[in-house]
Amino acid sequence: MTALTRDPGASLDVVLPAFNEAANLVALFAQLRRVLGALTPRWRILLIDDGSSDDTGAVALAARATGLPLRYVRLSRNFGKEAALSAGLALADADRVLLMDADGQHAPELIVAMHEAWLRGADMACAVRANRDEEGLLKRWGTRLFYRIVNASTEFRIPPDAGDFRLLDRRVVEALNALPERNRFMKGLYAWVGFRTEFLPYTPQPRGSGRSHFSLGRLLRLAFDGVTAFSNLPLRIWGALGGSVALCALGYGGWLVVEHLLYGHPIPGWPTVVVGLMFFSGVQLLSIGIMGEYIGRIFNEVKQRPVYLVAQDTGNPP
Image (cartoon, rainbow, N blue to C red; front, side, top):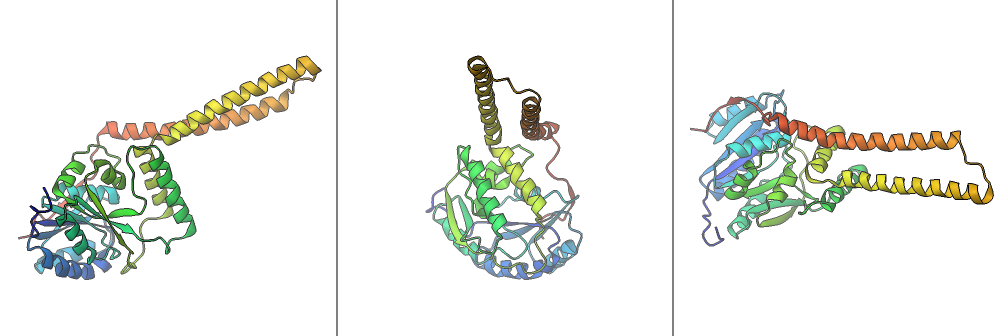
């Protein structure tokens, strides 16, 4: 499909993963109604409630009752944002699919620029953070380190400042839905499927209400999932370390023998053995732990459990 044949009024589904975002939904719905109504008469919101414990469901259903074109889907528990995005993509059947957060940080006004990029021929229009000045030093440093590790050993590049706020053409959605893995690190999957992508700089808005649900622990788990899903670099690093340690040990052993034969120096005994055993034991345990993480990912894939379970689905709006 070229830029000349794309229909400006093509249908559009908006996937909104939400977890305890009741306080932000009313304002967001009003903004979406204004922006999307000016782009196409065929649009719909797919709100994926990721096991919220507040009034997220009640607010969504009340908005639906007022005529908002919204399909409400509640997952059986909190499966995480990656699973909620996957659920929304599986349900979306429009010509285009917009992914955005429900916390108010993704400005709906940028959808117009994404729409124009799609009309120009982009299969994916992605919002990229202009800067990370509002983040702490530790998070900025960790983000840079994570993307350097992932991009060091992959055949494709994951943009460091690109998130989930993006507009996808239908064939991109179908490509993502065709990927069978359970460990769904979405930022990596977006990059892996390829297609023509246009990046749009933006600055996230302050949250309308509440606080981020991504704690440091959850961010670290997500980062480790991303590394193990798209990079073998940790295994290669520890393989190289093992070879280096073995060479150093061989060289040290040879030096002790030569020193003893030439100069008659006694070979160190107990301290050398204890230090060597402790060092090699630590290296081996750490290597086994890293290998175990990859084996654990294989175990999760082999079990073939669904990525999410749906507890409630209102179906398409009337």
